[in-house]
Length: 206
Image (tube, rainbow, N blue to C red):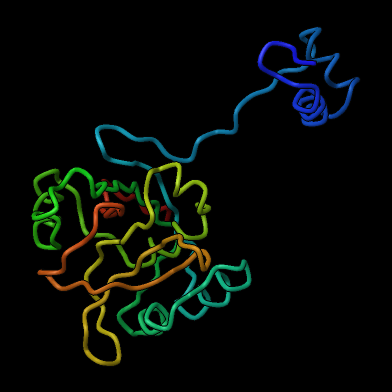
């Protein structure tokens, strides 16, 4: 038997979600309100906005912290996090703007062009720690809801042990939730399904 578009199993699931029959009846009487969880981000014209606040965690601490929460940290990302060039802050709130890859043509989606577009929009270069803060704050489902497979933080490139310039990124794939690192050279070409994080503004809490 169906009621409208819902079958009995779905109705039972709704009752369970509401906390059982008594809670469902309270909801029907208007005694209980159901609200959607507050969204951590917003999107306007192909740009995603959200805020992140630093807490002083060092690169080594981030490795332990993320892995303890079942995030995967690649060896390349670890080399950046353990670099002297990784400089954490404490109490700084970053207003982040992510340019979605789809706003660039395939031929123009190159690092130097992306940075130029960010400059034209008066966006600034972020601190590398923003990648860790994002990875911890947003789940893969939220990243998927943004329409992205990964977000690369467009900080000043940090050289790995081989001297290659890298950028930290947070991404999702079939093997898990990653904090990774990608080539940050000016001529690097990117695929459409990612996003590029810059700073709209930042405020120190100290």
